[in-house]
Image 1 (cartoon, rainbow, N blue to C red):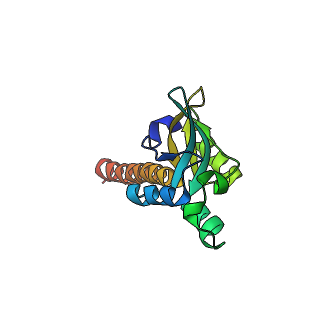
Image 2 (image 1 turned 180 degrees about the horizontal axis):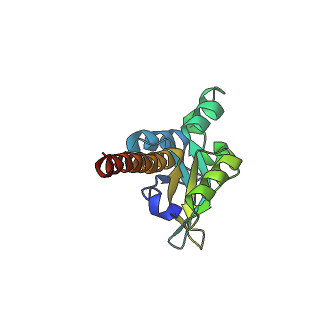
Image 3 (image 1 turned 135 degrees about the horizontal axis):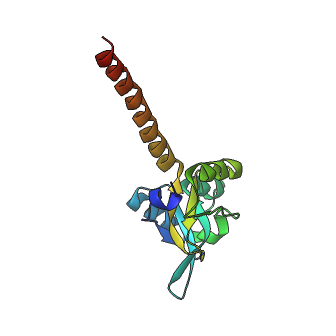
Length: 149
C-alpha cells in the first residue's frame, strides 16, 4: 500500500513569515500538533519545513522568547524529511525511524504537497491489519471445530 492512499490530505499550512503565535492558534483551531511550512509559487505549494507544538515549547516558550515576535521560519525544524506519495508503508516507517520524526509531509513527483503522514496514522493502519489477522486466527479455529468435532 502506498503512503498516498493513507496520508491525511487536509494539511494545515503556513509560510516562513507567519508568526509563531498564529501558527499555534492554527494548531489549536484544527486540533493538530504541527503545521507544514510551504513556499507558494505559481499555484504550487512546496513544503520547506515543519513546525511542531514541541518546537514552539522548546524553541520559544522555554527559551523565554515572545512567540508573537518570532516567525515560523526562525524556529521551524531546519532539515525537512518528506516522503513520496508512492512510497510503501514499511519503507516510510523505516525512513521515519531513521530520521527520528513522527510526522512527514507527503509530496508528489514534482515536490508539491499532497498530504501529511503521522505516526498516529501508521499505528491506526497497523492496528487494523493486526485485528484482521486476529480475526483470521479465530475463524480458522471455528472452522476446524466445525469440520473436526
